[in-house]
Image 1: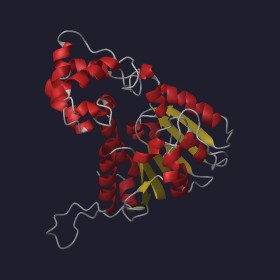
Image 2: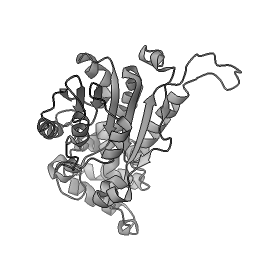
Image 3: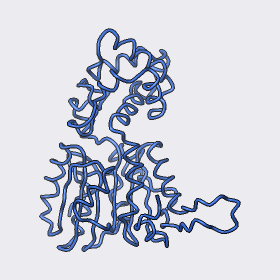
Image 4: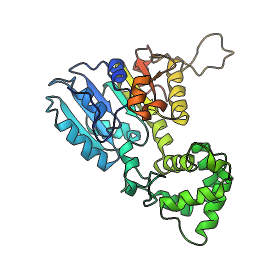
Length: 330
């Protein structure tokens, strides 16, 4: 199969993912972020008639594009594509009758295709409706959030999710603006941010609205909450020697993933003063490698988005895995 990037979205760290996952032809695999189907296509091409690939995505546009990409392969493997958030892992896999996975992959964050479509409201470079929902049919939009949240709540979102040092100024400006008229367009928010920050900050290399847009998008889609829920649930489904791969693009996501993997490596909850473990929790496996994997300079030159990507891999090969699959680690 060709592993060239498709027009919708160029998959990052593709070769590294395939090498770490090492799909076998009769295995069962999950791609929790289908997107344009780049990673899914690579996995599906390795599967035979007894293989099974399950793909999730909450974005209807991604589902449509990803399905076209996968259908071109005419694979003999079983394929299930579900419009669902990966945070709903347990209910979605249970409804499909899946009780075990040989591998799972998440490529977290907003895709290039979502950013490129102004009507989705993700981009601070193009004017569009202030939406930012991954699933446009579900939940409040960015416009709704900024209209209803208190100044303190908006400030917390901008600081916690965007590490925006001018969060308080921007939050106050949003509240003042909405007293006169609602914020409905992305360009209106960009202009407001530009006016709210100090003049020297406007001349920085990074776009003045980048951190705020990231923060609001994360809040609208509950991205970190969904990731934490997924990480809580995934051990229940991993088979012995199963691999979990997660690609993140900023420190907030990566910190959550890294902490979960450290807990799986050492799940003991006994006080450090105990000379011998009393809780009975054993390691589920180990991260490989511990610092994660980053893109090569060659890939970054071809796909600048890969520069901030970090792949973390966890192999569920520890003695505590069966305990986790039985629900013993909560």
